[in-house]
Image (cartoon, rainbow, N blue to C red; front, side, top):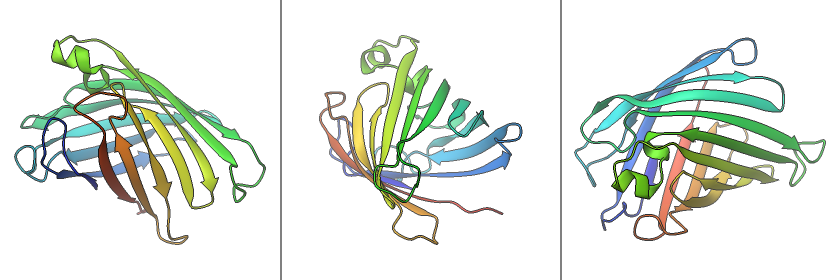
Length: 197
């Protein structure tokens, strides 16, 4: 679930929810994820507007993984992620042997895609370009990681916090559009919960 204190080019707050399931085993063969994004609670567009997303991913080793995905392959109402196809690769760097030590892991992701991954200029000009995106996450201490991300349009920075060891809850406070896309930086807050059936 996510919340933003205001949407781009507007002074209204809004929120969204993604509900999904994963299937298969990405270590042994291929993992598959299917999800639905509710893109608005009614602040910036009609309540429930959203779309279906799919992703295939494979863990090549303990350090490398790859993914391809298609966001918004079926949508309801206007969404800004319709028909966004992407590919990405991720690499994990172990800077210290024990994951419990400070600054023990760095995760890097790089990818390219169309749709929502295009530059803001390409979106405004309605050009079907390919954009690049990427992120770096550093595990600062055991429950907290610092994240910086290039979304394809602008820079975002935030924290990933797992406040409880035995509850699979992740909190993500962040600031988006730091370097000029949209109409200025915006605070966003996310929370994720996962469980195995």
